[in-house]
Amino acid sequence: MSEQNLPAAADIQARLLRSPYHQWLGLKVLSVGDGEIVLQATWREEWSVNPDNPYTHGGILAALIDLTADWALVSHTGRGVPTVDLRVDYHRPAIQGDLTIRGKVVKAGKQLSVAEARIEDAQGALLASGRGVYLTAPPKG
Image (cartoon, rainbow, N blue to C red; front, side, top):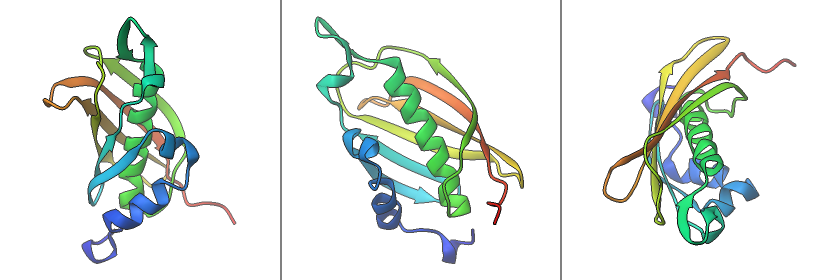
């Protein structure tokens, strides 16, 4: 997309929050660029693996990486794209607290594209990172 056609953060926010799951994650769009997006996720008690040791379940982190990388592609393509493959690396426990997720397109292809995301805590420490492959072929029909 050209800079003139780039969706505004408010537009991406409205589209993102159409999903009840994204609403539950407490997602907020902090910034959008061509092929880049920064989101914030509001921590919830239900994310805890164990109430005695309240760190965030890895499945939540994987979902945040997948959806942020996908939405980085939305900022570039203008439409959602399905995940073909996803790799997640966990670097340190995500203890209670809101998370910042930064996504960017690595390679925009005609059939398949690659995007990555990283999750940081409030102090900017890297908690998890990942890369996905997404089907960006034009929809049939």
